[in-house]
Structures are given as C-alpha cells and as structure tokens.
Length: 174
Length: 174
Length: 174
Image (cartoon, helix red, strand yellow):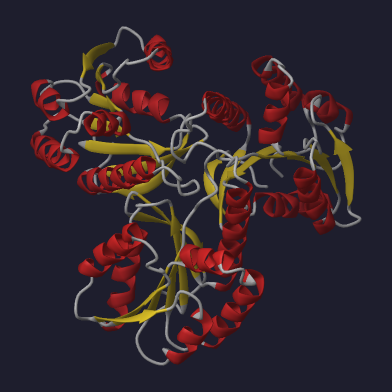
C-alpha cells in the first residue's frame, strides 16, 4: 500500500466517499481525522452527514488545528483519513495562524509516518477571479498547500463526478 | 456503441460540440433534447448559438422539466443528446421541484433505454465557496446529480479546452 | 521537441513553474513573454514573485497587447513561454480590443513559428455561474480562446496540484 495520497477535486465531487473506500480497503479499519470546526449549523449538518456514512470500522479524531501532532499520535496502526486540508487552512487563516510554518510542520510529521495517510483537499481556483481580496488570498494559499502536499505524497488523484483521475503515482501499489 | 455517456466540464470547455460529434457518429442522425428554459435574452442567445451549429441531421425536443418522459418517448431509434443536466436541475430547484425524486425517475428511465443517451453537465464546484447560501446549495445538488448520473453511465469524460479526458469507461466501445 | 503547447489549470495549480521547466529543458535557455499589465500593487507583487523564480537562462519580453508581433520578432531561437493568455484576453477586453480578431492574428503568427511556443492559460469556468454579466462574458471569451489555441497546439495539459494531466498530444515528442 502507498504511504500517502492526496485526493483533490471540486465540491461534491465524491472525494470523501472515495477516500473512505481507500482508507478502509487496506486493513478493514481506519481513523478519520476531521479538520472541520463546527462553528455554525450548516457546517455541523455537513459533518453529521459525512459521519452518518461511516460505520463501526472507523474511529474519530478532531483536529481543526494541531494536525501534525494528531498524525504523530495516531501513527503505527490503521490508515488515517484527513478530511480536509482546505478547512484546516481556513481555520489557520481565520485565527491568524502561520499556515506556511504549519504546512512545513505537517510535512515533517508526514515524512515520519509508518501507517498510511490519505488527505482530502479542494480545488478552489478554477472559477472566475474573486472580487474579494481575502478570497483571492485564500485560493492562492489553498493552491500552494495543495502543491506542497502533492509533492510529498506518493499518489495524487483528481476526483470528477465520483471517479478518480490519476494525477501522480509513484512506484508502489495502493 | 455505449448505451450512456456523461460529458462534464467547465463553462465553454467544448462539452456540447463534443457531445454532438459523439451523438451523430453512431447513426448519422441524432435527437437534441434541450433542457434550457429561454427565460431571458441572454439564455435565448445562447440557445440560438448552439442551434446554429447543428445541421439537418438533428431533430429537437424541448424538455425543461419532464426529462424522463421525453427519454422514454424518444427511445428506440437515434441517439439522444441531453443538454444539459445543470439547467434541468436549475429549472427544478427554481420551481420548487423535488430534484432528488426527479433524478431517481430519470435513472429508472435511463435503465430502460435501448438507444444511446449522452448527457452534458457542468462542473460548478471548483471555485471559491460562494458567499450566497442558495449558490452553495445549488453546487451541492449539482455535484450530487453529476455523481448519481455518472454512476449509471457507461462512460464519463471531463472536457478541457475542447478535448475529452477519460474519467470512467465500462467494457464496451462507443 | 513539440512546436506548441498549452498548459491550463486553476489559479496556483503550478502552471507557470511547469511551463518554465518545459521551456528551459529544450535548449537550456528560454524567453519569457509576460502579458501581465502591472496596473496595481497586487499584480506587481505577483509578477515580482514569478520573476524571482527565474534565473539567468531567461530573457524577458513584455507583451500585454501585441502578442502576435512579439512572437514573430522573437522567433528562430529559444523557446518562448507566453504567461498568460487569460491576462492578455483581459487586457484586450478592458481596452475594448477585438479579441476574436486578435486571436485569429495570434493563430496566424503561431502557424509561422519555427521555435517552440508554450502558452499558459487559466480555467475560469468551473465555479458557480457569476452573477456579474461582465464576468460571465469574460469566462465565455476565456473558454473560447482556450479551445481555439488548444486546437492549434501540438500538446495540451491540465495542471492539478503542480502535476500535468495529458489532455491532447500529437505525434511528436516534447
């Protein structure tokens, strides 16, 4: 099995469901690391809908911020699914965190992992340039994080209508 | 020839022109099923531009709502091109229709088809999260419809700059 | 080496860095044709960040408008990297230029080139339909330019998280 994978795609393109299938396929059990901060009802409903799809083969970790630490603490056993990098970045930016430094810390932790890690992230840069400066900065940061994590991952797929398209694949099987 | 195909992609990525080539290739004739509701001048102009590209090998059906019925009524002969699912979904949502139930009805009709069906749809979820709640709900619904129809189709392609990228392909030739 | 290539993708998907690697790979030197009009501080900062990545193997040409002329004048030696078509189109539209005629002129110049040309462009049509009419017109124009240039190019790639996905490839190697 590959050590690390990045699944990217637009909203509701089936990324999370695909990531869950990959994560459970390896050992029959997996650890879900949610980065969502349930700060409003809409987000809470979205989290609940995602959790309703998962069965007893899953355990859950909540990591809106200290993602690198949670990866280190959960290493050594079942695959981890990080869902998703875009919300993690958003949490960091909204709390004035240093997202470049945090990404470097995450890369260090990723390099030390022995059990697989699957990251879900979002494509946010394929629409019209946003009029809002903050939105432009966010999509620049999201693109930078996606590129940085993709470079460190063994496999990258782009999800369209529920199906994965191969973007990058190193030379070992998932 | 494959029985069903979904062509997705961004706006002006060449989806419709590609779908028209596929549709006519099979028998030299095809049926165009338009879901556009010409409710304003801009939409009317867009419809006219699309129709100007099509020749006498095409017959036309207008189906802003009862898409499943139109598929059943037009079955048995030439390929049908449904252009597009995103406008059909938009029509349903704007008229408070039950788009989940309508999608299930469409899947039932699709399963019964003997002549090919080619669906065109749009990727709307790869930009920044819209500030507008209705827009967020719409892109969630559009992504769900795309995944649902993709699962039922024999082939799915993602259109970029006029060219198809293979997303899914079952084991028979188009 | 292929004569012409189009690299498309979302914002911050790694298109420019990829294009630079391709351009320099052929002869060890390359010519950077920037279409950016440094009309504000944000754009000037973005241009500076791009230039900081390039080394002494690059020479630079500024072409916010007369792109076809600059291609003809710079032909015969090293590969040219045009970065990017979306800004060039934006410059034309904002100055009431005839972008369809300019695109035809660009195609004529491209057909006459002896040294390679690599175009970078942007996917802007995969988000929610913009409420702003001008934004809708722009994304239609951008999609049309991308399709038109893609048809004339020997190779087209779609860039995701820093990696190229093959869209179109004619029968000679880059």
